Length: 478
Image 1: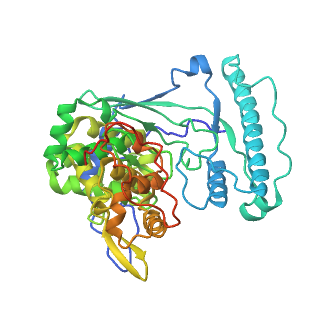
Image 2: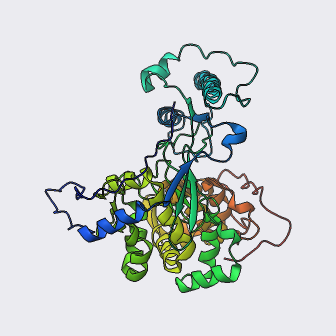
Image 3: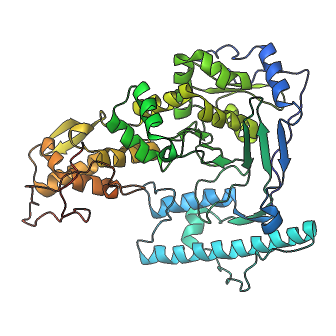
């Protein structure tokens, strides 16, 4: 059973230390913060009323204790998912059994999930009764059957499955800044029963303000200032609906610290796309970066690693340790959300970094065509907004465009194409095969590929019409 998971920071007048380890091959950069700056950061975070901890409002009606997925269970589920489906599944999906043997495994896993959640509900209600003198109807009247012994093959390959659910007691943190910004977070973020990427019970999330709800004129002005064309804006805006707003934050999953409208993540290294985005913000707008981040104890090193003044003791932590410091302290992640709400420069840094790292139009892929290998610019094959959004969705979530080269190779073979350039006429089928988290071929606001006009499969069978094809004139906006 898990309790609060947060500790109120204390101001220490002595013992300020520089964190991080020396790389023998490349000397560590000098400290990002002076002693005076670290003392100022400690003083800020230890001010009375800066952060207040209490039970969330829903505890009154739902109880202070509830059921959630365990971190150990989530790790085991990820290993199980990879055993069933070696390619990365969208985070919202569970694997499907492909064989009778896997169907037996799947039935056992689901039975264990149901059983463990029932046991956790009983624990939560016992704790609720002890703390409040009442229960809250968390335990279903009928107990699910016990799952029985773990299938031997799963035991051999994955080890014993841990408990997949537990009773937790969420705590709400309210963070107050001197400019009047007030932000609230609750730890033990509710997880779906089989989510495979949950890693930090003390982590939090806020979806922020969706890009969709921002005034259209303000958004167009922002993208124009960032130097992007309307087509790119529409693609990025479509993908961001699966990620968040400029002020979105998340510290509970395998991204470690993830922020912004494309969820820039530092990952386990404490650098990643988040470090790249912050480095751009710092380089292009040093005064804004000082006001938005350094003043609160967050910086980025020249190599893209995060650097943080840890509010508990004033130590400067770097890379993975800096990421952990942000996960552990709700005030530090609030700094990112405040910047997303108030800083135009920070928003433009997000847009420009997303363009540089994730927009796929200028990427190049290599594909076998007959007895040779051709290199092609992605934008010469996938030209429409719906197609580019589909590819960007994969690149943002998986870090690469796979399986695009394999899909193109199969298209070449299926249709007997003489060159990759001919595949551009089959963009609709390519995009349908590349679909990941969302079907962008069904989004009317995006420019769509034309139906195939002239290609037929080699075996003489006509290429099947896309289920998205409409009798209306296709939207030809590119």
